[in-house]
Image 1 (spheres, rainbow, N blue to C red):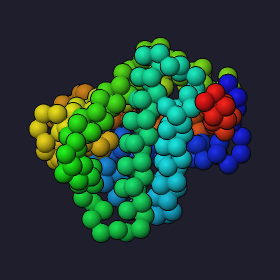
Image 2: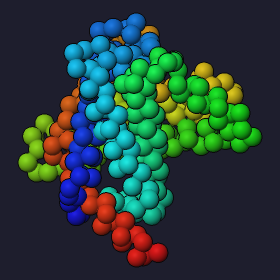
Image 3: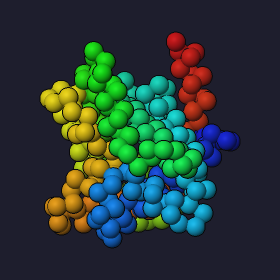
Amino acid sequence: MAQGTGKLEMLVRVGFFSRAILYMVLGLIALGAIGQISQGTAGIFKTVDSIPGGNALLWVLVIGMVGYAMFRFASPAFDIENKGSDAKGWAQRIGHAGSAIGHLALAWTAYKFATGAPGREGNGAAEAAQGVLSFDLGGPVIGILGITFFLAALSQAMEAATASFMHNISSRAPEQTELVGRIGYATRAVIFAIIGWSLVQTGFLAADASNVKTLGEAVASLAAMGTLFTLVAIGLIMFGLFSLLLARYRIIPDIDEHARKHVNAG
């Protein structure tokens, strides 16, 4: 796998750093402030905005999450991580696309907090879903998006079970990286499945946009489940730590090279 270089690689690494902050803050809120986790994703960015230098950090999160989304969109477009074009490969690549969409939504919410936009503490996901539902094929579109999140959840579970993610990490990474990654991916599988179900429910079963959950709302939905909620909160922090390791040790594919090969092959 060719190693990425230059500004694009740096942007992807900032993306992993942003993801680390996001998950660690979410996990810490879940452990220490049940009331705030009930605010969902808005509660994460509200917490970040309240700390010294929080507004600057929000801008880093916006840029980083957009960069990470670009990286993930490159997977279905150019197969930058060589997942292949069989059913398993496409399931993983479509799952990456779902992750990209989710992180763009997070970037948009972070942007609204960074700029002090009105309505920033509302349920942006529900509002967006309501807009999509107003179109004739809006329900199926949302339902299909839910299926991509189920595929992403399956991909995360496979990563947790096989630790195949270690193939994309430098041998210089700490030895605890695999364990931290397994726990983090297992936790994300649970969260992605909850998000996927909320979208499938909205798109195919009951056209009620208020059912749609983003990352924060998915975690909040487990608040009454005691031990499971605590384990998920710890798993989120672990995934944040894992993302910090990725920001340093992840092998970033050369997206430009894969794009050129894709064009030439076409």
